[in-house]
Image (tube, rainbow, N blue to C red; front, side):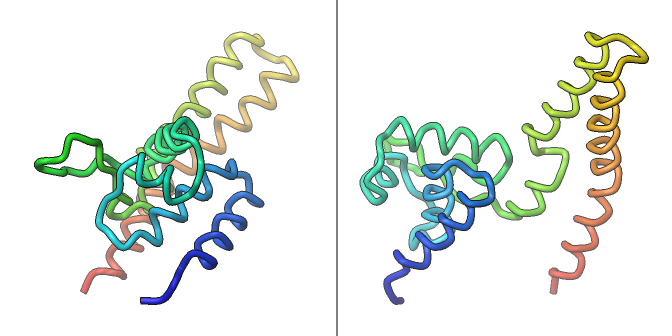
Length: 150
């Protein structure tokens, strides 16, 4: 296998240009290009040359959206993490805590703004969009999984 460092950094750059924080983008790329099934936070920090705090924040964010998860590591005293099986489908499902939180925040905002206000109308569009996506996405994800299975 060749050196994937440059390809991983290019992918991280694309992710960062599309809204992901730079450290989180680099951690995500490291998971995608990892030779091992799982990695530890200290391994990521050393590999990427970033602080343990940056790695910790990235792991938390990537876990929240369903892309990575804790991995079993019998005999190890450190937490191991891996790219979640079906990560991309999870990202686009109701298991995405960030998107669910946005839906709930919009709903709370509507209650706080009061009915028939400009804010309530804008927030209702946001809430309704996420509600629609979550009602439609499961069937789309199921179809994708069905087309991938042998």
